[in-house]
Image (tube, rainbow, N blue to C red; front, side, top):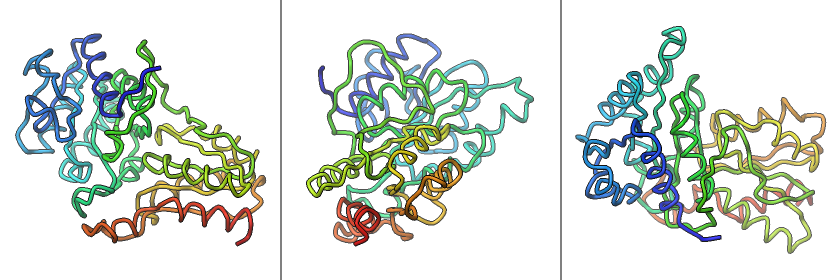
Length: 326
């Protein structure tokens, strides 16, 4: 199977959905001739024109507000916010409008829009451009939250997101854009609420999201050399969440480490831990451990940034503390 980058997989999903459905259009800052801050929309304006690949003013609230209005009148907008941190500038449109309209209009109106945005650190662009804010949107009823970790998942989930009738926050990770992986050339989609077992194992379950999936897999390979067989679960969508696959893995391994990049307090790992406790508490042989970002702004300094974001060594230490009591 051919291998393409995460960035190319996202671009293919956009192209295929725009060719399939003329109601799909894109809007965001510098997504036209420039091709987007991370070059995901490069070349799309040549095929689809400025009516369907719309450069916008620098106003995140206006971008999301326009997408909400267009979605309510029958279009299927895909809005791009250049950095996930900047969704804070559009929170009323996201959390008070997009998320609530279907409920507040008694089901008579839908908001079938996608908001694509990159989260995460690792490229040394400091506190206003490196946060992982997925938990903000998990906490808002009415929003769906996708978190693809591979090119295959990025393409399949984005195509599904565009076809959903609910507003979807599509969380990409900026260090994954150049990462390559196998992606079929034929049509496929990935259903929301279907976690993926990225690595099978019998000694411990590691639940990880976005870029942490790759660090968890690398840690699992090193642990295997030490005789520890780790299973790695990627939820792929946080809302809806595949509680069944997570619970079945815990029932098999009886031990859990949860790895996320966002701040530990009130973060994604806290919700995942609660799910394990609700679904599989009686099967646990040890307390659950969380490996998460520290409760600090992301530093500009590369060594300090490396300290606050979880790495393979921290994951391995957490696993060994549970499995070997070290």
